[in-house]
Amino acid sequence: MKIHVAYYAKLREERGCSEESLDTETATATALYEHLRNEHGFTLSEAQLRVVINEEFAAWDAPIHAGDTVVFIPPVAGG
Image (cartoon, rainbow, N blue to C red; front, side, top):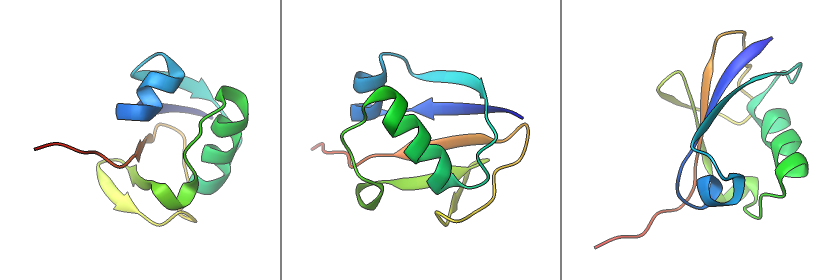
């Protein structure tokens, strides 16, 4: 299935891009992040992130469907 993934902050830096469309058979946000982490060498653990699916915060075991937009939100700092 084709999905869209957006990257912010540290994940964007580590990936080298801010978004991508990809074909995946992963069924949950957890499985997707683990796949991406292994493929791209992300250094943040799942515990350090929040997941958003189609502009709504979601549980890590939330299912992913074709056409979904998934964003992994890393910790941010600012002042």
